[in-house]
View 1: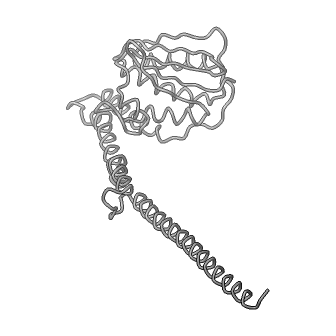
View 2: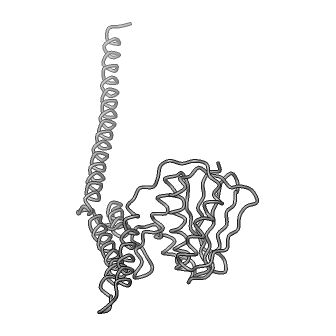
Amino acid sequence: MPAGVWILVAVVAAVVGYAVGRSGGASAGRAKGRAEGVAEGRADTEGRFRATARAVARGGLPEGAEPGSAEEELHDALRSGWAPREAEHQRALREALERVGAFLDQSVRAHLGGAPAGADADELRERIERALGAMSDLESFLQEPGEATEGRDLAQLVQQVTREFALDQAVSVRLSLDDHPVRAAVNAQSFMDALYLVLHNAGRFGGGSTVDVTVVGENGRALVHVRDRGKGFSEEALKRAFDPFYSTTADGLGLGLPHARKVVEAMGGQIELSNVPGGGADVVISFPGG
């Protein structure tokens, strides 16, 4: 091949190589720029989310979200759906103190301070016993449930508790038992304490009407139904009945059902609430059969 042709081929190859290299370099540069941009954007987003998380953990929300952005929408949802933690704690504490104060005023101060002048020793002794009983009830909510469990026939325990409840509260109980023993692994005293609290709730909100108690074994579980004849749970009460110090009455302490659930769940059981068609509430305590 003539020398001129070789020179021309070399020049063309050089030009093509330069163009390809430039194009490849530009593509690589654009790819690198995109990668760096994505990394920076991700870092910025993660940083803002972490700032939001830290602010929420402190009970507030960060400022400075761009108007109309998804971040502002998130802040608005948090602000409307979540109460700041400090405010929530203060409200819960205030409600708890008000409940305890009302309980002490009605159950302790009224008995001790309401004795008429010239009351005899028997009346004073009775008032003191009532006040001490109220304090004992309050103290019982702080006690941890018994840990030792053993297989027991729940029907026998239920019979014992319902008798005590009927005598104490002057509320009739209609008991329905399964044809066969209904056994579960429970701590007998803890189970009876929890059931008494549920019965007390049923008697109070059932207006003193007869309470129906059913013990039955179903689908491998031992169930105790406690049904009252009141108005049933309101929508809010169904959501908050297990919140400590929540009560629909001014003088209620709001610890009965929360403590009952704590005791039942400590033994591996469950407690569920529902309304009965036609009126009344149904509280079901259940355990794995055993």
